Amino acid sequence: MIRPAPAAKFRPGDAVRVLTTEKEGHVRTPAYVKGKRGEISHVLGTFPDPESLAYGGNGLPEKVLYRVVFRQADLWESYEGSTADALYVDVYEHWLEPAGEEG
Amino acid sequence: MSGNGHDGHPHEELRHESSPWAARIRAVEELLVEKGVFTHEEVRAQIEHTEARTHENGARLVARAWVDPEFKNLLLSDTKAACSELGIDASGPVELAVVENTERVHNLIVCTLCSCYPRPILGRPPDWYKSFAYRSRAVREPRAVMREFGLELPEGVEVVVHDSTADLRYMVLPARPPGAEGMSEEELAALVTRDSLIGVAIPREPARTQ
Image (tube, rainbow over all chains, first blue to last red; front, side, top):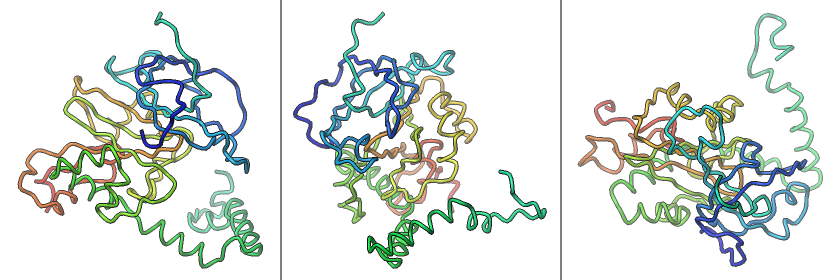
């Protein structure tokens, strides 16, 4: 953890899914992980909300940021490489929901 | 780009200077100076500061981590504290993180949304890092991208891509090349290339340096 996040909703190891919300503006969630299932790798801390900061807002309320790990094979059709290959993206909490059982 | 060199002599520098973007930046700068937000001197000093930083800072961090396991742990757990120990100014608002290459894992850094880069320790990003091609392909076909940089990884090595889309900026801690035993920290730092700190390459082998 880089900054404190006492109110973090998720913990390392939790299965999460990235929301598919269409949202205009300074959104830091890349489209290719939307709707994809991943796992919390690190709780990174609480940071000002970039979607507010970008437009002169005060960044409040702050958002908890997580490092989320995805399997490359889950992200791309016909991915070339090992099934162990992984991709990490830093995603804010309001873009994540708990993912149920795999399948 | 249309309008490029219709006199038959494309002039890279002039074209940049006279582009609409450059004109807009100049206009914004003038307005902000007029409003007293900053001075031209501060802008000039900031440009100088930005251009003075290079990947040499990153190379020093790596060389120290190769010879000092305790420092390596600090670099991986608290990158800013490790920077302070070497007198590197990383006090800005941006958080830094370092990911370690091992025999089993190779890391690659990209920012698909723009060009986020750990400037305090690596300086300005190379142009290709900001290109649409790198940004889109590094996440989807990292092994092909690395091959184009001349890096063919063994099958058994796991490729891990970090898309730095938020408040952290990443650097790779590459593995110490074979044959670098007994070298001084300064000699080791000279083996660490910029590209090896992004992950599209690995450090030079000692025999190839003078």
